[in-house]
Image 1: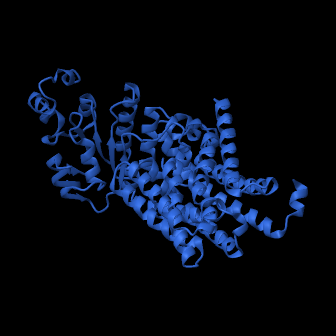
Image 2: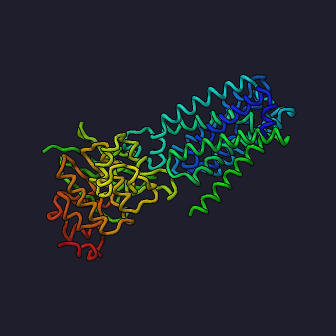
Image 3: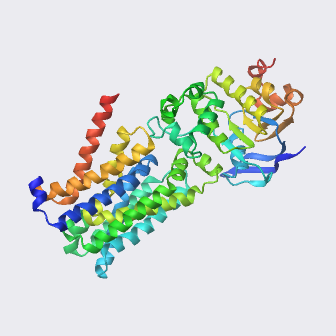
Length: 264
Length: 238
């Protein structure tokens, strides 16, 4: 593999770097998603990106921006439901997400459809890369600054509110960060698989974490490793990057699960 | 006598059903108030309303300098929720020494004898893995870290054994003796109410009685509160 890396050009190394960075940001944000028991919502949320990308492609603007707008609208919907009801109307969320996927498939121009669904790292541009770096810094900065409040809110909303925490605002900021990280991942993994990067590394980390600090670190590292290794493996084996990255993440999850079973 | 909390005509309704109806009371500073009533009487709802956590009708006024600490009945987290007691308490206080002192004062004696906080078992334990009594004490510690002068304590109906319960109330009594602290607690044990409360609020959707326990808790109010079968509760009277 070392030989392979030596023969890689700087563009590919840059690609691994920003992929891994997006993976780490996804894992970090995913750690709260798993604690909030919103894993399925996190996963399905990525489907919403498709119609946004389709419209952006038709208008010849960067599809990441289209994905971002669509995701932010969906996030506002999810946040509203989270605020207004005690439990998630899961069926409704499922219907909404699959509907966006169906509409997205219909309106995405045929040549771009496969790329939009499964991602293509060959198409990741320098501008996309810079966007990923800036957004990842923003995600780590913003999320760590609301981390305490977010966690107390997950443990007990009453405890948080009685301590003067604006749980509703904190949740909205957090969910917007999730929308941002999914929009970043879409280029790499496509709209069908990006959500997995928010959920799988965090789920793996939860299997072995002994503290919240350790959990967040492990989730970030698992996200970083999944994307980094996945992109390299995909290149070596000639596989598409999206499914390879997700399968590496799943292998990490299985390993952590076996480790947990042995530990007990 | 200064009041720390004044409630007037409090009314809380969920889906058109009144859960708390026209409740008024004044809580005197530095006193201990118990709230008793059957399951579903609206005790926790009353707490959540005065804390401003749910919408209500009526008037709730706190003294301007009131710093409120809230101890909820339980937390809805799984056993493997990856948050240690240490991390939880550090959300509110950075100083290890203060955390040690508070844990000591809520009855974790091993904390006091240990000098390095990494050696203390309870600090490394996940919040969800604590026993009912331990979790209660950690939640009290969390509330105390905010230096409250009013403590709202929602006693759990289950999960705490009798000896742990004893400890918590003697602990609360000790805290009161040490500082200016008003305590409002929800209880299911009349025995505890007689022993520790200055006043008791009997609640069954509406206010059934309010005043010193030995004066207001009688057969009539208990019948109104719990129905005819009150013998179960009376055997706690001493």
